[in-house]
Length: 84
Picture (tube, rainbow, N blue to C red):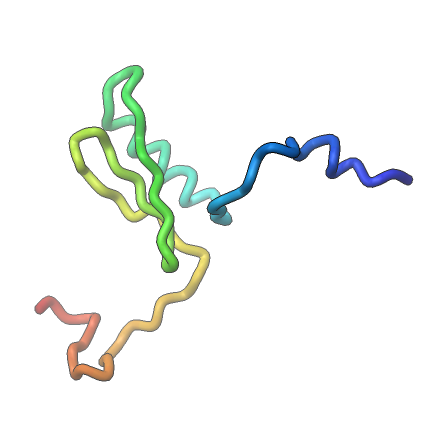
């Protein structure tokens, strides 16, 4: 059987970022779209820890992460579970 991946991946397109989405993350993104007007866009930003969505008005929502975060005291003595 022939490899079909060459037929579904355009040759001139370079993948620069990717993220794995769970259903909950997709629903968070839909919730962001419910807050903007028709025809307005949401910007999706990727970090090394997760995915953020930003409205045209600068409202940010952490969409989610597929990585488990460590929560607790850090090397600097700050407890991430407590309000600073």
